[in-house]
Length: 137
Image (cartoon, rainbow, N blue to C red; front, side):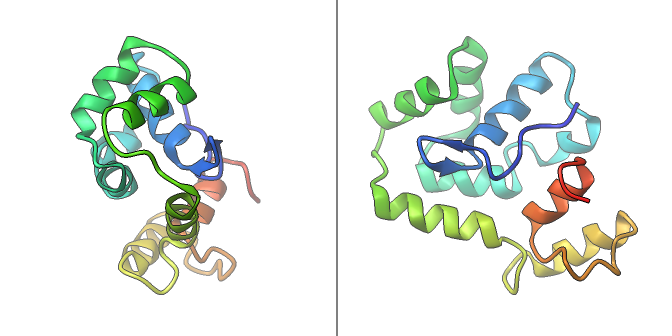
């Protein structure tokens, strides 16, 4: 099973819903094995670092249950609350990840593995996920 989109938001914060979805699907044995090796790493790791939360603690909290909003509020109650500027910075980062940055080479490798090297319209990892997960042609 495929996780939510990188575009899905929790209280305006992109990607958090996707990370929690991967945690939940994995716990239920429903997450496609292709996603297992990057859990808590890659963009997951970037977001948990940005939120200043240990991935394993977040995973444990998500497995206790609750909505995405409730779990984000738990995080804020146990650390710093993001303000509008923080959210804009994160959303800008995650929406462009792979486009002329530290993840560009990784994006090129992933596109090649997926047989999509000729797709110049795929310029970010988020766009690649949308194509691979069937949300974008």
